Image (tube, rainbow, N blue to C red; front, side, top):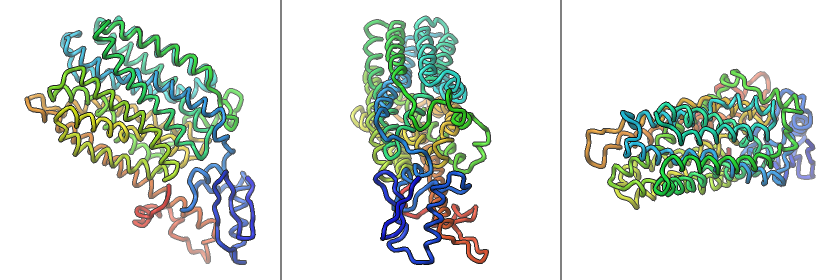
Length: 509
């Protein structure tokens, strides 16, 4: 990476972002500036600047020590394909709450209650996350396109065979295991292929890609309600499976790896960096991301699958419950690219923290007092915008704190841990439902539970923010030759991120 020098002082040029180290460089600071340039120019230097100071975007500094991303081009085609694949994988899972209500109201399976159905829906999401390391191995062996096509076939078979289920364990195998397995094999390589195409617009691109699950959920929720009423449950499953297969198959053929991070099939270095390792779990920043994701996923799954049932408990009919679910998906579809756009400008961790706090707040206020149809629609839309922030910001945040080369393996580890809350989140929430109550407050304990999960997740994210601020300050201390006469500055101490000023410091991260 080349560093440019002007009369005003040394600076780092990265795209259209420039970091000025000093308005004028005194003689005593020249060695610091030269050292900074050496850190960027020499890839073998053990110490690299992986972040930025207050006036620089974290994205620009991260890109400065990595290969330069195209920041667009064919990457937008890959973003659109990822959007469509998200719409036809995660979107297909969105109507499960509608199927759940239909199965229960029609008594399709004898002696099967909400808890068992909740486990099936959670199992599908869990399988999609558990297979993340397997999906990475398939990507190394088959390439991105081959992996997406393989996953599309498996997921479509799972959805199609759900139409023939005559016992509840048939649904467990077809929808819970087979569909979830295929969805995970498709999802992991599809999302990981988008990020390397971008640097300054990475969060926006990933936000657009993951918005597909929201818009897909909106379309499939409305479609499932109409198809069930017209053709019945079996043909609804079949039609959804056909739509999912053809869309994912053709979009998978259009996906292409970024020239910066070529496919591990032809790149042994990339293959090694894509491999899963348990050493990832020893890093404090990764642990904080896992805590944030674990708690938020508990609340997200509970909210996503409970909202239609909560709507019917208020006296609304099944069609209105499906519309509430569709509005929630609409909020997800609109919110994720908007959150990505804001996070590219205001800081990814900052934006994720504010949205996590906001979702916890409206869950404990607006949702509890939404006792009729219009307020519930408002809550569903706002919750959709804020509740899915983790899945639109986790990948860029992981890339920011561990680097582009290790982001794929780290994100696989994150997905693996998310399998637990995805499986049991809704089941736990249903245990809080007070079935003995006949009024509209039977879901109150579940609502409080969802709000608390988001607040706990926000605390973990606040700690991650403090760590990131400390890391940036520590790198700055290295550059400025702050180790004088054996004195170690606060920014370089291993516990420095626990200092109160790191928690409250106003900085773009």
